[in-house]
Structures are given as C-alpha cells and as structure tokens.
Amino acid sequence: MRRWTVVVAIAVVVAAWVLFPAGPSGRHGYPGRSVVPVSVQSDQPVQPAKSEPVQPQARSVVSQRPPEAISYPVAGTGSYAVLPGDPAVIGRAGKLMRFQIAIEGGITGIDRGGFARFVRATYGGAQGWASHGLWRFQQVGPGTIPDFTLLLVTPQTRDLLCGARDRYTSCRIGNRVVLNVARWAHGVRNYAAALTTYRQYMVNHETGHRLGRGHELCPGPGQPAPVMQQQTLGLHGCTAYAWPYLNGAGYQGRLGQYDDPIPHS
Image (cartoon, rainbow, N blue to C red; front, side):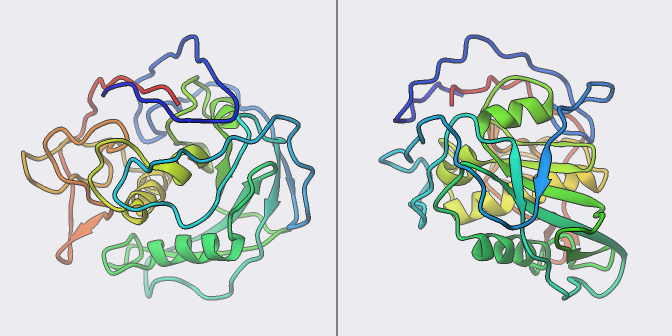
C-alpha cells in the first residue's frame, strides 16, 4: 500500500513500527503483552488534551466525505466518557454480549448519541453479527461490567492499548474493541466504497475478533472481501464488504493474513 499524507495541524513522524502476526486478537494485539491501564469515567465533560487538535484532511480518501467536523490530537487524555446504555436487546437469539461505548477525551466533533446508534445499527444490520441467532447485543452504561468495551481513541492511545506502534490501524485486545479515530474520520485509501461502509467494516471486524474470529484472506478477484480480511491494509482483488453474512449465509475466507505495509498516519 502506498504511503499517503494526511494534512494535519501537527506534523507527526513515525520513526518505526513493528508488525506482529495476529490470531483472534487482531493484527497488533497479542497475548502476554501488558496493557496500559485506562481511566474510565461516566459521560461527563472531559478535559481537552494539551496537544493541538489535528483537523480532518481536506479530501476524503473514500467516496463519501465525513459528515462530522471531527478533530483530535495525536495523543488524547487517556480518560474516557462512557456513553449511556440502551435497554433494547439487539438480536432474537444467541449468546448475549453486553457492551459499553467509551470515547477518549480530546476527540471533538463526534455526535455521541449518533455514534452509539451507528454501532447498535451495525450489530443489528440485516447481515450483521446479530442477524442469524448466534449473538445478541445490549449496550450498557456506566457502573456496569460489560463483556467488552468499544473504545474510540486517538492514534497514540491506540498504540498504547494495542501493544504495537503504527498509529494507523484499529485492534482488539482482551475485552477492548479499539477503534482509531483517524480511520473513523478519514477512512483509507483505495477502499472504493463510502465512508459509512468502511465504518461498518471497522465495527464488525474488530468486534469479530472479540467473538473469536481470526483474520481471513480474499476468496478470489472480484469477490466481496470477508469482514475478517484486513481491508484497512488492502483488498487484494476483492471488493469492499462490511458484513459477516452475505445473502443470508455466513461469509468467510480462508484463515490467514497478508504481509501488507502500514501507511503513515
């Protein structure tokens, strides 16, 4: 994948990054690595990060411009606002997974309620994880112990949580589904689909790791990419696809991952 430049208010130079093979934990999450503790707060205002915010790039690299004016520092506050829960259970049958949604301090321009609705709608989509009776989901609020927490974080916090430096990808580590706000705001180059599709992919792919799924390969040129393919780093002849099911049936590729380079942030 070619390096590309994002116009930001701070110039960030990543001197080096390390690639680690991944199983169900995700490309850069691996067992045995200590995880930096994070401070989780209720949905109260958080202090902005001291770093100067990075403005979204002028031109989206996907076919739809982000609707929000999202900005973020390279390194956020390290504390989080846990969003209020929702009593509705998503899905009719299967194991119930209770999840929290938390947003790191320093990220601005996010419609928090809209973000939570997007995540719930993704889980409950017609081809989503809750659509075929294997899984149910329920968003819980502060003060509850969830099965996993979906975190929207800044690039440097992504590195601290995921245990490897790249500031570009997202990951799953333990009971944390970690979404990189840089990818949420800008998408990725050469994805050839709307930003909404990429965001659905982000949520479904990293949650898929929490559900025990590993990385998969493209089944063949022109075919939809499995949701567990690392579509952020390359499609390898497949077309962008955001869902674990296709035409009402489970859709998977052969287990494995490509040795793709990671672009600069």
